[in-house]
Length: 202
Image (cartoon, rainbow, N blue to C red; front, side, top):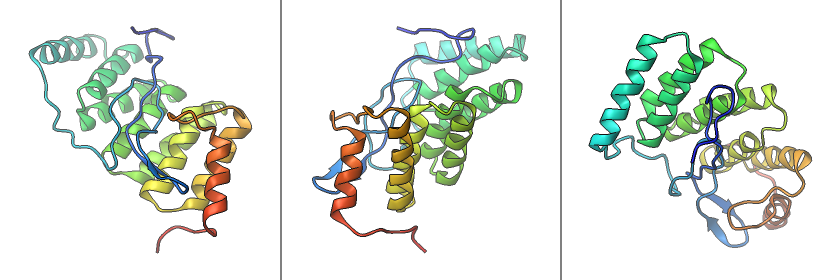
């Protein structure tokens, strides 16, 4: 069920879309936290060729009509972006989220979900920027810190930057956990104990 805030901007659910390394047990899949919803975990950027049902097509038309009728409605653009998020239409979700942010640039939840969409498209640097913007708006945006760490570790191969992002998360919430139930602080300890520092790949 959806829980709407600020005229229905976001869905209060959790999303997991990418795997990351825990250096004691290899790969722990499915830990990429977001604001919008939960989806299956993946090890790499996903395709945007999702199966779209007749109901999805009908909903798309309704939401597109809503944005056409009310182009200044932030909530309408976010609802459209969330719908495209649901049906894995990455480019369209990015466009809708960016339209909402043009009207309301300080929505940390939308910035977090936009970062997830950028990552799905393979735009790791843009994803990091979007998570950073979310954190700047809301320094307690836990999902943005965690996602930032996942992108650094999994996509950019920068373990030190990933650990720093997760350390920042632990400062916000010392009891933050990954999907497996492991505390983020334990994950950091495991990573630090396993290997020497690594910087970004050249």
